[in-house]
Length: 182
Image 1 (tube, rainbow, N blue to C red):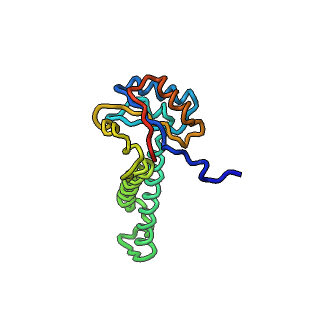
Image 2: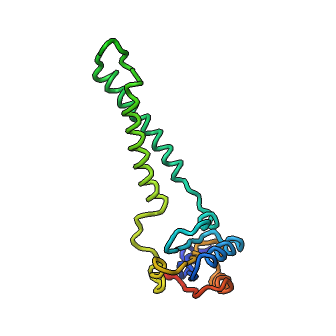
Image 3: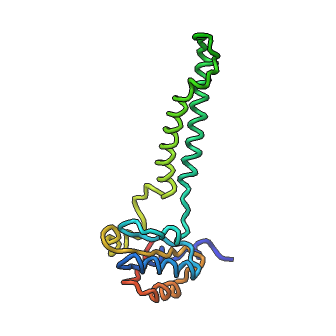
């Protein structure tokens, strides 16, 4: 019978450093082909095609759609509650539930809810705010915001092995391979 402490890896993962985008994308593709799933890449600029290689899916659009529809329903409900239930006024013989008059408030609440959902959904899906991450312990990682590209294979990956993963990353010809402590 194994305890939970036996499954904890002694390191967070391995971090391979590259000088350009092409070797980084090639390394990420090779790691994906090798069967690694728990990977992250860090770069000083967006790298076209890298999220697809890593298997990331953008769910922000769906969240914004749901937030917008919710905002529209909240706007309609608010107008209905005020105009029909709480404070009905018969102005010019129009019906209390006059939905064309509700269009502008519905539009505004749709935009409000969609924009707030976009901001907070993006932060939540990115795992932000995250003031600390184990990669900050690697001395060369400060170059990730200036001129270097990094591929991290996490030790939580089912295929991770202390020796074989390091050898695999070394075969991909990085500038360096560093252990990332917890």
